[in-house]
Amino acid sequence: MVKVSAPAMSLDASGSLANALVFSKWKGRNYVRQLVTPSNPKSGPQVGVRAMFKFLAQIWAGLSVPDKATWETLADQAVVSPFNAFMKANQSRWRNFEAPGQISPITEAETPGVYDNEAATGGVRQCDVEIEVTTLNDAWAVAIFRDTAALFTTAFSNCIAVIPTESAAVFHYIDTPLDPDTYYYNFRGIGNDGTLNAEEGEVNGVVS
Image (tube, rainbow, N blue to C red; front, side, top):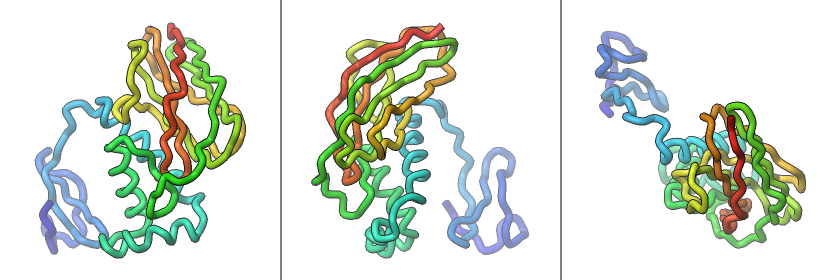
């Protein structure tokens, strides 16, 4: 990435040029970078990273003011916002297959929630995936993993969704669109202080 003061003869140029360069602005600074197209934007690792990114980006707004304030030290060190510090630290943990946490520092010290009654009901091009929080404790979210082979090992690279589970209730996730096949699912609860539960147990659904 190259910072510029007046790219393309303007103060705020944006967009791509000749499918080679991208002009944009980050934190008030203009820059130019090479246009890069992922060879497979739907690879397992990319889907897994995006699943966690979506969860974290949506959950931030609901965090309490004191919880958000715990990220200010990391934010000041990196000269970014507390939100960006929260996203960066938690995405880094996720790439190491460690759970995210609401506050900094992440200590993995609280009691995880209890999950049960997992199910997967196949349909036309989709599967209704279900899990229940039976004992809330410090449950924050559940990561849903999918494969087309039975007895697979969960990893961030086969995570398809991370959904909030902050109440004792039954939660559904509609996995779509899917090609006709048998799909296997597993689940791991996430505590609000970065605890990653053991695998809950595999279920499967047949999609037509």
